[in-house]
Length: 104
Image (cartoon, rainbow, N blue to C red; front, side):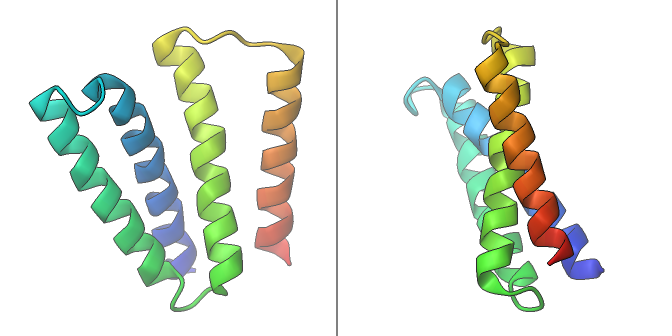
């Protein structure tokens, strides 16, 4: 169970660094860039820790799914990206894939 919590945290940090890249404006702004780099390191490090107890393919897919799903939602909330039918369908499919991998 602990490995899954570590993986969840790694995925949440992935959302942070992906959104952070937008705020870093091509890594031209110091603090958003520094925060993004720290989040990248922590996210990948936690992914590695989780993959010690979870099959690596499953861990990576779940990590990526959490990041993709969370980034899509946060981009709509924070950056005003549009919410459309295709985007909702994509989010549902990603969520279904993550759940399927978790239960496999």
